Length: 154
Image 1 (cartoon, rainbow, N blue to C red):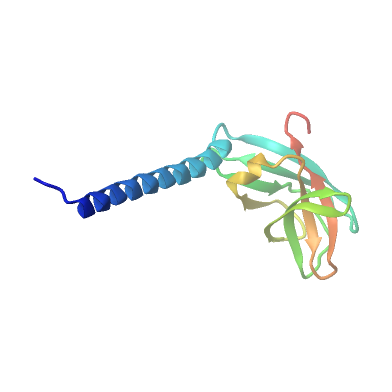
Image 2 (tube, rainbow, N blue to C red):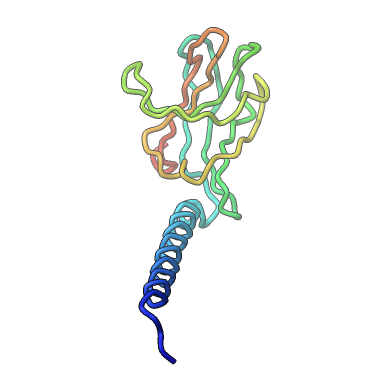
């Protein structure tokens, strides 16, 4: 069977496109699994810290926990307490003085007191030197911070 030059170019273009698409899909899957790999493993507390007041008194601790499924959670202790306000939010932050280097929204604060738990994205396990912030949107201020230190150092 004879292949004409136009068809040969078409066949090469289709093969090259398929190869590039396969490479792109492989890289995308590998990246997705690498994030999960950082979060998977033995269930344990990865990092924890005590809340310290910035503008309002806040007590208790925050912990980044890896569950048996590999999911990451942010947990506040049963001793957690802060001032009640209408627009409180939980953020993962890294500050350089007052400048925000990392500012990732976790969730609106569910309650101004007591044990609570929030889902974290897998990439949160890679963040170093971060803190959990209780942020008041109404007054545009961080009310308190809990510096998350590796569990063996906390």
